[in-house]
Image (tube, rainbow, N blue to C red):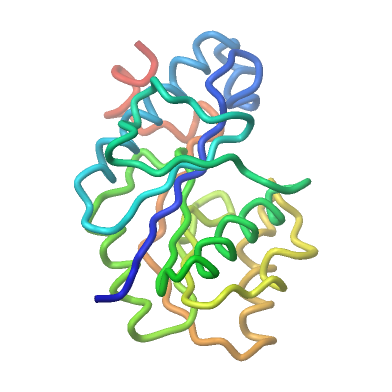
Length: 201
């Protein structure tokens, strides 16, 4: 059986430090409430999956949070920017013997366990799997070997991330599969009408 790992990047849930663009519209406390609900939804989506799961926190490990220590490995992100942090997390896992590694954040309310399983299955047929976000970024990246170049010279936090990453994949002549495009919640307009009552309550 291949060793498979799902990495989840989580920011420490502190008012003023999460969902800054959303906070400009609804305030820091409300934005923190939305972020906590996104974390809870992510936990519910991934907890029953068969592969190993590792939570990578932005600052320090939280032992008494939603992520049960018996179900989730825990670590702290390492690096100066998002690219370095993602590469370090994936490269570390591959060096630990994992054959397939996928990494996600916590901003995709639409993400399902079926899509995550599709990501791991896709790696049987390609070198890279990517989930495109509607804001020009990606919500998931997965691979069987670590490719440092995919995380270098990317304008993180902009609408160029997807295009720049795909360009690098093509330059390296890597095979890749795209997952369904999903909505990344960064601003108030990103929240679907059917989700607003819950997320903004």
